[in-house]
View 1 (cartoon, chains in turn orange, red):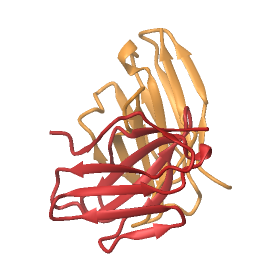
View 2: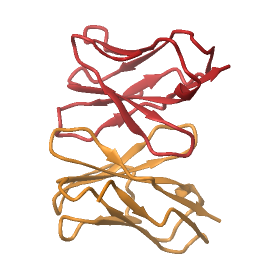
View 3: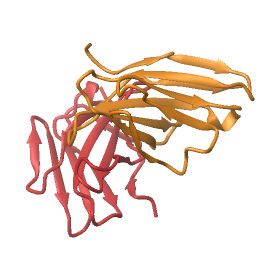
Length: 112
Length: 111
Protein backbone atom coordinates (compact mmCIF):
# COMPACT_ATOMS: atom_id res chain seq x y z
CA UNK A 1 0.00 0.00 0.00
CA UNK A 2 1.91 2.97 -1.27
CA UNK A 3 -0.77 5.62 -1.44
CA UNK A 4 -4.42 6.56 -1.69
CA UNK A 5 -6.21 4.66 -4.42
CA UNK A 6 -9.36 5.85 -6.17
CA UNK A 7 -11.58 3.99 -8.59
CA UNK A 8 -12.60 4.50 -11.26
CA UNK A 9 -10.21 7.06 -12.70
CA UNK A 10 -12.81 8.30 -15.14
CA UNK A 11 -16.58 7.99 -15.26
CA UNK A 12 -18.93 9.21 -17.96
CA UNK A 13 -22.59 8.94 -17.11
CA UNK A 14 -25.89 10.17 -18.42
CA UNK A 15 -27.79 12.79 -16.50
CA UNK A 16 -30.11 11.20 -13.98
CA UNK A 17 -28.01 8.08 -13.43
CA UNK A 18 -26.44 7.13 -10.10
CA UNK A 19 -22.69 6.79 -9.73
CA UNK A 20 -20.48 5.43 -6.96
CA UNK A 21 -16.79 6.10 -6.41
CA UNK A 22 -14.43 4.22 -4.16
CA UNK A 23 -11.45 5.39 -2.16
CA UNK A 24 -8.89 3.18 -0.43
CA UNK A 25 -6.83 5.29 1.96
CA UNK A 26 -3.35 4.63 3.30
CA UNK A 27 -4.02 1.79 5.69
CA UNK A 28 -2.80 3.37 8.91
CA UNK A 29 -4.57 6.70 8.33
CA UNK A 30 -7.54 7.39 10.59
CA UNK A 31 -8.98 10.24 8.59
CA UNK A 32 -10.46 10.20 5.13
CA UNK A 33 -11.66 13.25 3.21
CA UNK A 34 -13.66 13.83 0.06
CA UNK A 35 -13.16 16.99 -1.99
CA UNK A 36 -14.48 18.15 -5.34
CA UNK A 37 -12.51 20.23 -7.81
CA UNK A 38 -13.67 21.97 -10.97
CA UNK A 39 -11.53 23.66 -13.60
CA UNK A 40 -9.81 26.78 -12.32
CA UNK A 41 -10.87 26.19 -8.73
CA UNK A 42 -9.16 24.76 -5.71
CA UNK A 43 -10.46 21.58 -4.09
CA UNK A 44 -13.72 22.17 -2.19
CA UNK A 45 -14.41 20.16 0.94
CA UNK A 46 -17.35 17.74 0.84
CA UNK A 47 -17.11 15.49 3.89
CA UNK A 48 -14.71 13.63 6.15
CA UNK A 49 -14.50 10.57 8.36
CA UNK A 50 -12.49 9.69 11.38
CA UNK A 51 -12.40 5.92 11.33
CA UNK A 52 -16.01 4.97 10.48
CA UNK A 53 -17.62 8.11 11.89
CA UNK A 54 -18.64 10.85 9.47
CA UNK A 55 -17.66 13.97 11.38
CA UNK A 56 -18.51 16.82 9.06
CA UNK A 57 -20.43 17.47 5.86
CA UNK A 58 -20.23 20.57 3.71
CA UNK A 59 -23.27 22.50 2.53
CA UNK A 60 -22.06 21.46 -0.94
CA UNK A 61 -23.10 17.92 -0.10
CA UNK A 62 -26.74 17.97 -1.20
CA UNK A 63 -29.13 15.17 -0.34
CA UNK A 64 -28.20 13.51 -3.62
CA UNK A 65 -24.75 12.83 -2.24
CA UNK A 66 -23.96 10.19 0.35
CA UNK A 67 -20.66 8.92 1.67
CA UNK A 68 -19.86 5.91 3.79
CA UNK A 69 -16.85 4.37 5.43
CA UNK A 70 -18.41 1.27 6.92
CA UNK A 71 -15.42 -0.41 8.51
CA UNK A 72 -13.15 2.56 8.89
CA UNK A 73 -11.10 1.49 5.90
CA UNK A 74 -12.27 2.22 2.33
CA UNK A 75 -14.95 4.79 1.59
CA UNK A 76 -17.59 5.21 -1.09
CA UNK A 77 -19.16 8.39 -2.42
CA UNK A 78 -22.47 7.99 -4.20
CA UNK A 79 -24.21 10.62 -6.29
CA UNK A 80 -27.82 9.94 -7.12
CA UNK A 81 -29.70 11.45 -10.07
CA UNK A 82 -26.57 13.07 -11.44
CA UNK A 83 -26.76 16.55 -12.95
CA UNK A 84 -24.40 18.25 -15.38
CA UNK A 85 -23.22 20.49 -12.56
CA UNK A 86 -21.85 17.41 -10.80
CA UNK A 87 -19.15 17.10 -13.46
CA UNK A 88 -15.87 17.55 -11.61
CA UNK A 89 -12.83 15.78 -10.27
CA UNK A 90 -13.64 14.00 -7.01
CA UNK A 91 -10.59 13.77 -4.81
CA UNK A 92 -10.10 11.56 -1.81
CA UNK A 93 -7.39 12.20 0.76
CA UNK A 94 -6.30 10.49 3.94
CA UNK A 95 -4.20 11.53 6.88
CA UNK A 96 -3.14 10.43 10.31
CA UNK A 97 -4.43 12.65 13.09
CA UNK A 98 -2.96 16.18 13.03
CA UNK A 99 -0.87 15.72 9.90
CA UNK A 100 -1.03 16.68 6.25
CA UNK A 101 -3.13 15.01 3.62
CA UNK A 102 -2.15 12.53 0.95
CA UNK A 103 -4.48 12.74 -2.03
CA UNK A 104 -5.48 10.03 -4.44
CA UNK A 105 -5.37 10.59 -8.19
CA UNK A 106 -9.06 11.41 -8.24
CA UNK A 107 -12.10 10.26 -10.16
CA UNK A 108 -13.05 12.50 -13.06
CA UNK A 109 -16.82 12.52 -13.52
CA UNK A 110 -18.45 13.75 -16.70
CA UNK A 111 -22.24 13.96 -16.78
CA UNK A 112 -23.64 14.16 -20.30
CA UNK B 1 -15.31 37.08 1.23
CA UNK B 2 -13.58 33.82 0.31
CA UNK B 3 -11.79 32.09 3.17
CA UNK B 4 -8.55 31.85 1.21
CA UNK B 5 -7.74 34.22 -1.63
CA UNK B 6 -4.96 34.01 -4.15
CA UNK B 7 -4.05 35.80 -7.35
CA UNK B 8 -4.85 33.17 -10.01
CA UNK B 9 -2.06 34.38 -12.30
CA UNK B 10 -0.71 33.09 -14.56
CA UNK B 11 2.76 34.15 -13.60
CA UNK B 12 5.05 33.67 -16.59
CA UNK B 13 8.69 33.90 -15.58
CA UNK B 14 12.00 32.99 -17.22
CA UNK B 15 14.17 30.22 -15.89
CA UNK B 16 16.33 31.40 -13.03
CA UNK B 17 13.93 34.12 -11.94
CA UNK B 18 12.67 34.64 -8.42
CA UNK B 19 8.89 34.65 -8.06
CA UNK B 20 6.67 35.29 -5.06
CA UNK B 21 3.04 34.38 -4.42
CA UNK B 22 0.85 35.80 -1.71
CA UNK B 23 -2.30 34.50 -0.19
CA UNK B 24 -4.72 36.01 2.33
CA UNK B 25 -7.06 34.20 4.66
CA UNK B 26 -10.14 35.49 6.42
CA UNK B 27 -10.39 33.31 9.52
CA UNK B 28 -8.21 34.79 12.23
CA UNK B 29 -8.54 31.51 14.17
CA UNK B 30 -6.61 29.66 11.47
CA UNK B 31 -3.85 27.58 12.99
CA UNK B 32 -2.24 25.50 10.26
CA UNK B 33 -0.94 26.71 6.93
CA UNK B 34 0.42 24.90 3.92
CA UNK B 35 1.41 25.29 0.31
CA UNK B 36 0.40 22.48 -2.03
CA UNK B 37 1.52 22.02 -5.59
CA UNK B 38 -0.79 20.69 -8.29
CA UNK B 39 0.37 19.70 -11.75
CA UNK B 40 -2.08 19.78 -14.65
CA UNK B 41 -4.73 17.04 -14.27
CA UNK B 42 -2.96 15.60 -11.23
CA UNK B 43 -3.77 15.56 -7.53
CA UNK B 44 -2.46 18.21 -5.12
CA UNK B 45 0.74 17.32 -3.29
CA UNK B 46 2.07 18.90 -0.13
CA UNK B 47 4.93 21.26 -0.94
CA UNK B 48 5.60 22.62 2.53
CA UNK B 49 4.02 23.61 5.80
CA UNK B 50 4.21 27.26 6.83
CA UNK B 51 5.36 28.21 10.30
CA UNK B 52 5.14 31.52 12.13
CA UNK B 53 8.90 31.86 12.14
CA UNK B 54 9.10 31.26 8.41
CA UNK B 55 10.70 28.23 6.88
CA UNK B 56 12.86 27.30 3.97
CA UNK B 57 13.21 24.15 1.91
CA UNK B 58 15.89 24.48 -0.72
CA UNK B 59 14.78 27.10 -3.23
CA UNK B 60 11.41 27.54 -1.53
CA UNK B 61 10.71 29.90 1.36
CA UNK B 62 7.35 30.23 3.07
CA UNK B 63 6.35 32.98 5.47
CA UNK B 64 3.33 33.68 7.60
CA UNK B 65 2.13 37.06 8.80
CA UNK B 66 -0.60 36.44 11.37
CA UNK B 67 -1.28 40.12 12.01
CA UNK B 68 -2.05 40.75 8.35
CA UNK B 69 -3.41 37.25 7.77
CA UNK B 70 -1.29 36.48 4.76
CA UNK B 71 1.04 33.76 3.67
CA UNK B 72 3.74 33.95 1.05
CA UNK B 73 5.77 31.53 -1.02
CA UNK B 74 9.05 32.56 -2.62
CA UNK B 75 10.69 30.44 -5.29
CA UNK B 76 14.28 31.26 -6.15
CA UNK B 77 16.16 30.20 -9.27
CA UNK B 78 12.99 28.96 -10.99
CA UNK B 79 13.21 25.71 -12.94
CA UNK B 80 11.03 24.57 -15.82
CA UNK B 81 9.83 21.79 -13.53
CA UNK B 82 8.40 24.38 -11.11
CA UNK B 83 5.59 25.07 -13.61
CA UNK B 84 2.41 24.12 -11.77
CA UNK B 85 -0.45 25.56 -9.78
CA UNK B 86 0.39 26.49 -6.20
CA UNK B 87 -2.45 26.16 -3.72
CA UNK B 88 -2.55 28.09 -0.48
CA UNK B 89 -4.20 26.02 2.26
CA UNK B 90 -5.34 26.80 5.80
CA UNK B 91 -7.00 24.95 8.64
CA UNK B 92 -8.85 26.72 11.41
CA UNK B 93 -7.91 24.25 14.11
CA UNK B 94 -4.75 22.26 13.80
CA UNK B 95 -5.71 18.79 12.69
CA UNK B 96 -9.33 19.04 13.74
CA UNK B 97 -11.03 20.69 10.82
CA UNK B 98 -10.76 20.07 7.12
CA UNK B 99 -8.26 22.04 5.12
CA UNK B 100 -9.55 24.98 3.09
CA UNK B 101 -7.88 25.47 -0.28
CA UNK B 102 -7.44 28.61 -2.28
CA UNK B 103 -8.08 28.58 -6.02
CA UNK B 104 -4.40 28.39 -6.73
CA UNK B 105 -1.84 30.48 -8.56
CA UNK B 106 -0.57 29.24 -11.91
CA UNK B 107 3.13 29.48 -12.57
CA UNK B 108 4.75 28.94 -15.95
CA UNK B 109 8.52 28.94 -16.07
CA UNK B 110 9.75 29.62 -19.57
CA UNK B 111 13.09 28.60 -21.09
